[in-house]
Image (spheres, rainbow, N blue to C red):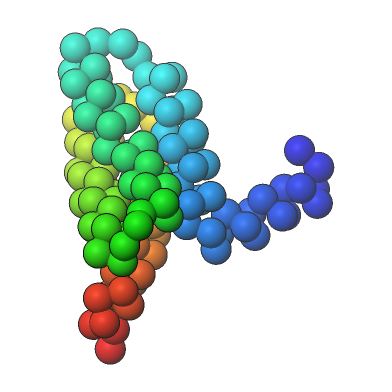
Length: 129
């Protein structure tokens, strides 16, 4: 990827939640696909794959919703999925031999996405202080 395209990608990804979640999902899928296949990893990987990719999917659903209420509902679900993903990443980090550095990086991105969703929800619900 050219330097200019990389800068544009990074700038857009940092500020655009939908775009950022899409690339977060891709990074998560690639990482999970690289893990050793065993019974323990299989359970965690399946749960994490569902919850991590659900974040972006619910944001896309929110953007296509027909009402403010539905929009908020999909953002609520996305936030719950992000919180669930943090749990599964923590288990994967602490209970397996998976790459801790990569997991911590993905956990950090999950945390940042969670904060963006929570902030958006507070604004949408009129509870921003």
